[in-house]
Length: 402
Image (cartoon, rainbow, N blue to C red; front, side):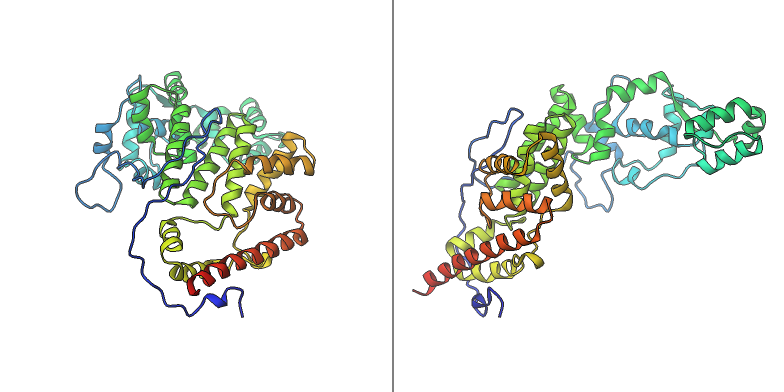
């Protein structure tokens, strides 16, 4: 018989009331100041471009451009992104990845490349740029043909080939040319770094960032930080705790890029607390059932809770990347296990998941044990939490039938 089998075979009773529950949210600003408690369900902002009819693909580029603002030199986000990729494309006969359509609504990528060339953002690359596209074995083979050494880095091998090889023969053999950026193109990328950054990280749409920059004239990283806090608030208020956790993880990575490990550490500890909370997305109904319809709550919660314990089979795990980041942070701070545990515990006491499977102390012990792969300690902690959770649910059951 399973741990929560005493909850089974109970008929569900439908909830008849709809409540609002106030939940504290620690919405940390750039200076670590918590935001006040909030309530009410929040609906995320409508898309930047409204489409009046159903469509299978992304919004048409023409619709996106109507809401966008060009750069100082007249380029829009999709053109700036193409400029980033230009050195990887030949002057003709290219193939393009699907993201040009699905992320940027570009249906004719080659036309964008041609336009960038015509407007002086790119130029035709030289022989060296063509050789740089060769694979290392191909370059070494060319060097062998002229009895030159084939050791060294790729750039060194190309230097050697350009110095001792027959440039006319190489030019004929590798006649395909790739685009290269002009100083004008390099300046464009320097002034609009948000495009390539968001393409790599996918935190928000480049089109939305384009609008926010035009509206506020703030640096894109300041805008992105505000966006993180905005989205965290939306997800928390809507009981989407998995999404909230993901935003906090994004904020950790963002802060580490800015070399702010202390503030990033708080975010990482909050990620830990939610990873071990057993909470996911769309949790509003579960909290309402617990308050108004405990029989149905017990039935629903049982199917989830039976996977929490024991440790050997738990779904309440710390992702390996998160554990590795905690280990790296310990090295960054130069703390022994005891001091690091206390530092983690201090941050956990400032986080506010609406439900906890483990105490703050247990969460701190779990991550320290996880770093050291101490499965005995982990099993003991999960066993203790299992008994406590079982007692809590039995208490609810006893109140139902008293």
